[in-house]
Amino acid sequence: MENIERSVDIKATPTAVWAIISEPGWWVNKGEELRPHRIEPTDHGTVRVHDDETGTFEIEVVEQDEPRYAAYRWHPTSSDDPATLTEFWLEPHDGGVTLRVVESDFADLPADKLADFLRNNSHGWEQELGLAKARAES
Image (cartoon, rainbow, N blue to C red; front, side, top):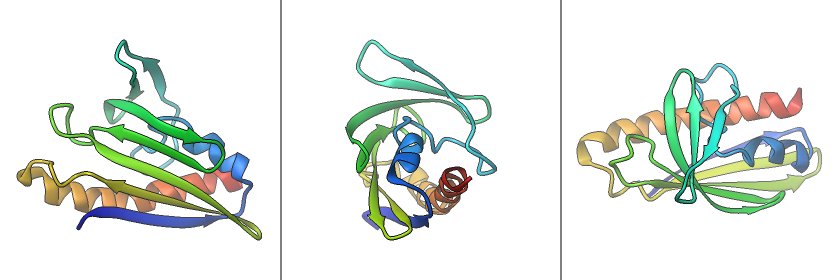
């Protein structure tokens, strides 16, 4: 498997969905709801996203093209492991937008973590996209 790809149709404007996906680490949750995070810049061009339940993650904002595309690099397992690339696309259509996520660059993750990572994140993206949908449509 070269990447994880998921998508969801959302009955909302691109601007409403962009307000969610433009926040680094918006997807760092336990699956029940999108929670607020404390975000602080670092001295080396990344941000630290602090979540009360899941911990702290360092995230690089690779690119943002409002309101169409956002890309981030982050360490989903530990800061000692290679970072993955997480990209979000907003594709407008009649009645709303499709939010698509692709997470890639995890072939270099340690073999003992890769299977768990793929399983957890494949399921996790379905949950997180559902939370984004619920928030944008509310």
